[in-house]
Amino acid sequence: NAGVTQTPKFRVLKTGQSMTLLCAQDMNHEYMYWYRQDPGMGLRLIHYSVGEGTTAKGEVPDGYNVSRLKKQNFLLGLESAAPSQTSVYFCASSYTGLTSGANVLTFGAGSRLTVL
Amino acid sequence: TQLLEQSPQFLSIQEGENLTVYCNSSSVFSSLQWYRQEPGEGPVLLVTVVTGGEVKKLKRLTFQFGDARKDSSLHITAAQTGDTGLYLCAGPRRSSGGSNYKLTFGKGTLLTVNP
Image (cartoon, rainbow over all chains, first blue to last red; front, side):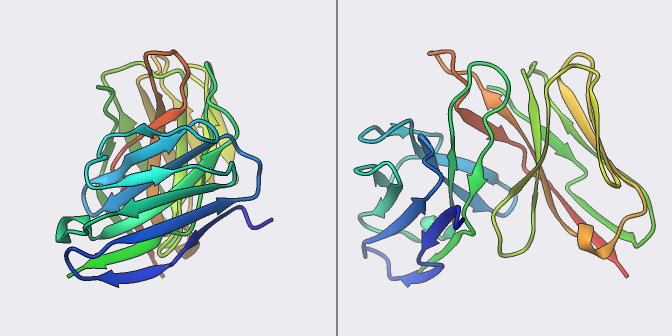
């Protein structure tokens, strides 16, 4: 099983450029998430989706847009990149959002984005 | 806001030593998870603890959930260089709808085990 696959793994952008990060999962998971990871800040949730065709804002959504047109794919878009968006981006998925117990995430390997 | 604070932030030890890292909160969590992240990779789940006072062992790793379900610890016995990585704790974040589909992560403990 591939699990969660992110593309591209590395990207360098100039300020103001746009780009899309693609996340694909083959586990038939309902829930998908985009996090960013910065030194000293931990993992912060950008946007998430609880099912095909739905999206919701996380902790740090400004400057990003997402789409979940197909259950297996979750796209993260930057319309006008800024240096503050230089980060490592992780996509994750989970089978369900449980009302009790744990919601276990499977992560991709990350996409390192540099905005000059 | 349910914050998870991890300590220490950095830990560098020699192979063979024992260590404990901590994950604390002022809030009660229904469960806590521990993930390990190796350089260039995404976090990978190590364990989930659900019951207050629960202790789980994974080879040389021992995880404990506090009785009040506000804290957790990870103890590694006889650390090996392969244990090097970022250890993250995470707990479900309450939502208005009641389903715990978002996780709050601590900032992690970066462990380096030197040969």
